[in-house]
Length: 223
Image 1 (cartoon, rainbow, N blue to C red):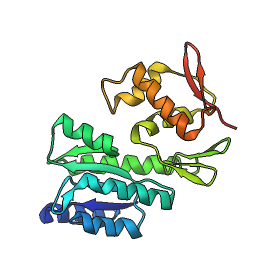
Image 2 (cartoon, rainbow, N blue to C red):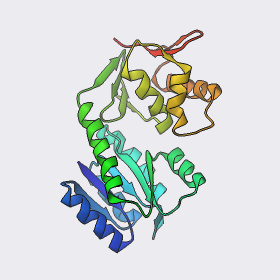
Image 3 (cartoon, rainbow, N blue to C red):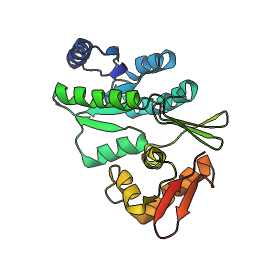
Image 4 (cartoon, rainbow, N blue to C red):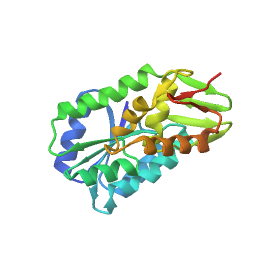
């Protein structure tokens, strides 16, 4: 698995680089946003370890470039924000901006390793799991969606819902189960929040793709 490490602290960056390489990961190291953008422009990464405080701007400014690269590669890397900022508001802002996970410094390298191995397992287990729903193709391994020939970009919250629905096409998922998928991003999520994100998915994927089962929940209709 290829990883992009974005870290401006040279001693920490070198330590993380050496550790991950000793665990057989392929790692590129960028010390600022400019270097990170150059790497993203030429290389596809399965995961990005992203510091927030960089010499030439905030790390979250890299996320639009990652999303643009996902369009070209038909794949989206998993972004783990790695930072000393430990406020809940910082975590929420990072996750809402498109990050997938959050790790607070200082951290145990074994914890980072466990998260990266979890990413590997998910990608490996779902390597061929492309679900065709009418003209929409959902690739769970690459976390990418195409409608016809056009790529569709989903937010992390939209992915959280679609991942559950696409895990068992045709099965009815209760509102409570789907709200659990949103709860990891926003502890205040309720039925109204769920309706909002179901509506967003329908606008992007097609109104007929997700069926409302009155009084119970929702299900994804697939071929």
